[in-house]
Length: 429
Ligand SMILES: Cc1ncc(COP(=O)(O)O)c(C=O)c1O
Image (cartoon, rainbow, N blue to C red):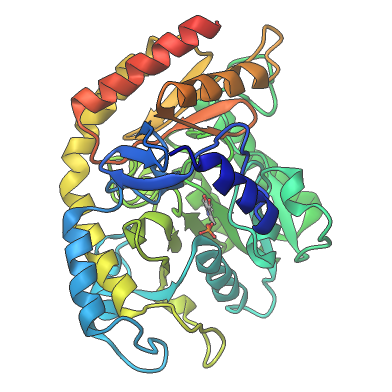
């Protein structure tokens, strides 16, 4: 029975979503199995989106995560977790503290989403010192859509439309995008040079003209910009940023909401850059595709003052029991992800695209025109044709596609999807 059309019609009439595009994706999901998604009309799709980094362990989730979830649900789910204690949140906190980079004492705050993990970070860093109230984030960065996190977001103007002014005291700086160098749009320079430019920009222009460095509380960054287009910065960027931050006593907040939990072949994406942030945010994949969860891991000295921050559901027993299992499985999957990385790197590098970048199973491909302007039309056409051919892809940035299959993808599935993608691109370009 063909019924997707009716569901879409009724949904568009009744549900207040603003990012769904029924022309591009007339997809009503019925169920999923591993890397495959089935719609209610019986069509099958190979998933290269992981529900935007949530279903990292496959659809509907990893069998072991489902098992733990059911067991925990039968025992205890909500546990008034910020007022009483439960063992599950303690165990997950222990794992996050011991596995995250940084050889210093840490604490954890649990919430229900990425944006909440960022909001908690904002309160943490701003409440340390009376004088330091300013924040810095990167152009192209995405940190969420509530007022604090939206203020740090500098991805697309539409995301901030009609609701401003937002939280004051945020300055935005260029991100070191090697393919779209903010200073040499048409040129190429050594990645280290690009990093120097960003650091100089911060020191000379931001601290020199806009805000005194000793009034800046923190710099927020994504280790790889996700919504911004899967932009991988030069390898030494975060080490240099850390030197600068240390010099001026500024904290670094690493937003791993999209890139964390194994996506890049390391548990935390910042480990690929040898970074040691003061605060790390997680969400999406930590919930195993089942429970909403957010986590803010931070240097102990930043700790919240009494009563400053809390919520109702954060750290509930079900979400944190699932989170612990997700971490265990993701850890075991890391060698597999590095194996799969080779296939994606090799195959994508041989496609007719203008840029390929990525680590682990986080890849971006970009389309530009002869004048280097974004080739949005080609990008959208590739996504549309892929969908018609049973391959699910999502856009990112101005004219890029993100390729983020579930981490459990096997070689034959990866090759099937990549072959399909190559044929589609060849038929369009
Ligand atoms: C890097 C990053 N931070 C924060 C968020 C916000 O997370 P949520 O949608 O769970 O609020 C996202 C969502 O895409 C994200 O990619």
